[in-house]
Amino acid sequence: MIILGIDPGTRIIGYGIVSTEPKTKVITYGVIKTQDGLTKNSKVDATTLSTRLLRSYQQILKSSRNSSPDQMAIETVFFSMDAQATDQNRRGTRVALLAAPRPATPVYEYSRPRVQRKASPATRG
Image (tube, rainbow, N blue to C red; front, side, top):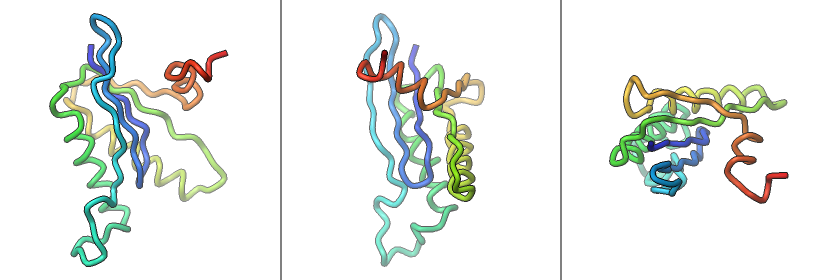
């Protein structure tokens, strides 16, 4: 089974693709910076939310294209005192969900602490 994991955001998105068969191994991982490749002289304003969301969508699709994930895991948005930041993060999550490799791809959402406990031996305990 191949799983695409996403840590959503509107400026920076973390992703990883792992295979669980025959044993768990990392296929690829990285960071998508939605402003990369856009210069101040660009005709596209890299600071607009719509531009960043579109780039997020395009880059998530590109990152998962070759591996054809069977499942998608996405970190749930945490709540903060900054309502605007929370709202923008939710938009990033929605875009990541839209970029699921196939319409029928199962998507599972996990909280940040749960992801950290599973992903890092140093945080187990």
